[in-house]
Structures are given as C-alpha cells and as structure tokens.
Length: 518
Image (tube, rainbow, N blue to C red; front, side, top):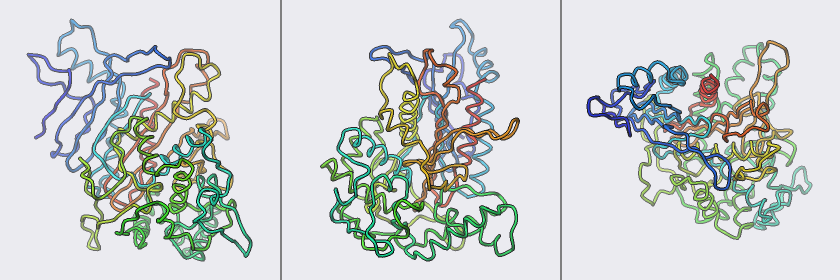
C-alpha cells in the first residue's frame, strides 16, 4: 500500500493522476510529491516561467528514490482528465529515460544491498529536494567554490606558500630540500600530503602497480590480475565504479579502506587549526607539484588557509556561501545539533549483515568530507556552476545575470590539470575540486566521448556522486536567446559505504540528455 500526493492534479471526478514512469520499487514507499518549479532566464528584471514545470520526488522507506526534474505541457483546459492521463502516459518525453534509469538503480541496489538510495536528476536547471545524508568527498567541490570566491575578492593567493596564511603548518622538506606547498596544488591533489594511508612505501608501490596494469589492461599474469583487484583507486576511493568481472573482489578491497583508524575518530576538534595536528608533522609522500595523490587531509590544510584569508571561521565561510546559493539543507555533519531528516548510516558486518555504523566525529575533515546535504541542494549547486561555466563561454552575455563564479574561476575549476589522474574514471584528469573528462573523438564512426565533470564520495556509512553533463549544443546556439543552464545534473547519495556510483550517474545523465533532445 502507498499513498500518492500530487499538487495541482486533482479533479472532483478522478483519482490523483499517477506520475508518468513511476519508479516506486518497493511496497514500503511512502508517497509521491510534486512541486511546481519556476525557470529563470538571464536578465536583471526579465524572466520567464516554464509553465506547468513540475518535479517528481519518489519517496521509499527502504529502497530507491528517483527525483527527476521534468517539463510537462498540459493539453487545453477543455480536455477531460481521461485525455490528460492518456497523453501523460503515452507522450511523456522522459518516460524511456526514467524506465532505463530505474533498471540501473535497481541493479546497483541489488548488487550492493543498499538500504537507502536517493537519486536526483535536473534537466536544464529544474531541481528537486529530499532527506539529509552524508555527501562525503563532494564536500571538496563545495570547498573549492568557496576558495574561488575568495580569490575573486582578492583575499586568497592560490600560488602563495600555505605558511603565508597558516604559519602553524611546518616548512616541509623532500629528499632533504625545502619544498613549497600552495593552495593551487592542494585543489588538484598535487601537494604530496598523505591521505589516510601513512606508509609512504606502500602508497608508492600501489601507484606503480596501477601504472603497470594500465599499460597492459587486457593481459597479464595471474599475479598481475591479482594486483588489479587491489589497485589504490579501487581501494582508496570508495566512490569509484568497477567492471562486473572483478566487482566482488573490488568491493572487498574498498571495504578494506575503512580499516584505517582515522575514519573512526570520535574526538572533536574545536578548530581546523587543531585538525592539522593529525598529519602536519608526517613526511610528504611525493614532492609537491610532481605527482597526483588524492588527499582529504590536504583539504583540511586548505580550510585553514581559507579561514585565515577570510579572517572568518571556515564553517561560517561555508554557511554564508550555502545561504547565497539557496542551499538551506546543507550543513556541517555535527553530532550535537538536532538535524531534521538526518538519515541513519549503515555498513556490512563480518557476517554480511547490514548494521548501524559506529559513532564518528568528522570535525577533523570539514573541507574534505564533513557536510550533510540533499539531492536538491546538490542539484542546485551543480546547476549554479554549470550556469557560471556556460556564461563564461558565451560571446554575448547582454541581458544575462552573472554566474555565481566569475568566468575565469568557472573555467579553471573544470579544466584538467597536468600530472593529475582520473581516480574514478580513467578517461579524465582532476581539475580543481572536480574530475574532468574532456570531449574527444579520435576516429570517425567510433567512440565519441562527452565532456562531463563529477565528484564521488565515500565516508563511514555513505557513498555519493555529483555529476554534471553540459549540453554539447551551446556552440550551435550562439547569438540566440538561451535558457541557462543547458545540460543534465545527476546526484546520487546512499547511506551505505563502499558503493561505486559514478558510471551509474553517467548512464542516467546520458539517458536524460537523449530525452531532452528528442
């Protein structure tokens, strides 16, 4: 049994209309909610509403929720309810995309045994909302936007040594020589600061193993194939997707990542400066600027830099940014405050049963993995950056509102950086707080790679992804009046750790991109 609540779709004679392409996958579903959305077009005072634009949110107690921003044009006012039902069911532009996405989500839910999964899809800026979950390393993308804003205000120099702002961080050496760490290096994971693994030798061995396997992806000895199952990007970045052949082995390795004791810190750090004590005296793994090493701790150092540059507490910097963006449900993952709709967090125990995750305190890593959010807030953030990025590429911006980020900042965030790697997609490189896959087609009638950006996350009891697939038709519409943003934004959050979500999000984005172009 479930009850449907639909805004604006009742009549005296008929029952509520079913949402087209319903994605209710379990009998525990609580209901369906529809919210009218307004679409704004650039201009200081001019805007247009996309009439009858609606958002569907499918709520499931234990199962899957797919929230999709859809555009629906009703028939004439004189049409009967029966006619409208038939039209909605037969001609819904996203029906096929929803059906395919439902299958993708059901598949991953079954594979990982996730007790809860929330998915949001925004098409050309139409957004959704839902309950609050840990977003893990997507926090890095949020922090990067805050850093960009401080640069625009002239308060932060990305190329200055971090000690200019944080003298408490010691001068580092590598091979007996003083080296410089900058905020720009941190944003692209080139600082050389360790992640959760403290053993430098082990980190270097894993990276060499990864390079060896990438050179020979389809062959190798039995030992090499065993090595492939323990790649650091498969183990150290729980958000990465894997091939079905080695998925079970890879998931086991991902779970090993959560054996690092620093994931389970229970003590509270009263400031980001205090958090530096965890790692500030540890030796660098690599020489800064030379080698990509994904590092949450490095982002903690960045948060201290931002705090000093702005002369304001880091959390206050972030809260002010969230308020300006309208992200009212995005908050620090603090344990003391009552946070309404905060989900529970789960993992598998040694007997393979789903159990509650242990208590943790994430005050040591606000910038790198310490925020709670909803799919609606993340879609809003993704669309804000997509708008900024697309405005930056327009020759004529007359009548358009400025983006949240200035053109230079927006482009830099989504530009791949040399010497980086694509941790969860080998086609990409890391930019600043985002993985970037560039548009590419090497041969005629062969694989065509689309430009997209994403960030995944993995934390105790949580996995997440935020993915932005910009429209590839912007160049064709130069000189025309455009509704911005143009493209698809997908976010998935689950309250189960060690779940790879990037390829699923990308598949969903492509489905809705096809539908929007029909």
